Length: 360
Image (cartoon, rainbow, N blue to C red):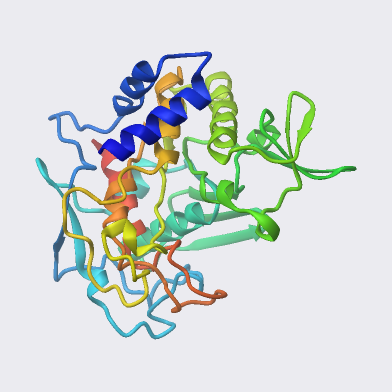
């Protein structure tokens, strides 16, 4: 706890020295629980993982939408216990997912996931969850670079995915590839949606040849690099301005997917010699040893200041517990994957929480 507070104070002083005191910063970040509670006062993001023999929510072999990157059972993952855990809030029960109800409620509507491969992970999960309820429903799937659209034709429900690592614009300029921290022309693609679920963080941490930009830009000035938490804060603040300017809450519901954790470093759960390799059970303690990621602190800061209603799907802690749920080597990807999630698997719970928020 002391380490977390020291880190938070450092970020507060470093990021917001001209805007707020460290005490005010900590108060606003820890209280920015926009949309976390149900009408009865239950925080659906505080709970524990329990074994449930009825899980998973669908069969990997009958869902046509799972990408090979996430299809762990197709790639012969030998254990299946990770499929059998259900999220149980401490003070309420989550509703059961009903794909027919979902389609009826959102008949003729457009639901878009906007973000990186974690948004892709969640979009595919929801597609499979709905498909398992209406396996004979007619669908059409359209894909082009950066955009995918799955339509349940009998209901006119469109599940869209817009792939963008940063939400902020990434442009090719004469100087090279430029990440524009104060520009979101991308946002034109998000207009006219009935539900938007945003996500961004993992690509902000990339360095060296894995980062897809050569410079950052702010106020027309090129910057070779900066502290990534500061850059993330600036980029998310630009996104927040876009929401404030362009969203009509009577027409569009806005969610932020929250920070999805990685499990490459075993010391995060008090097992320094380990990674996600060979993990077959969740972390069962209440307090996760690594504490709250600083990216989540920064995100909460941005959300605490946004003027339009945005519901935070606060998936971070419940996902930190799931060191067992990654593809590891069981998927079509290069090397060890302790970042994404198997399907069926954890993103199904993210979508169950989304379903709870939409229907409660």
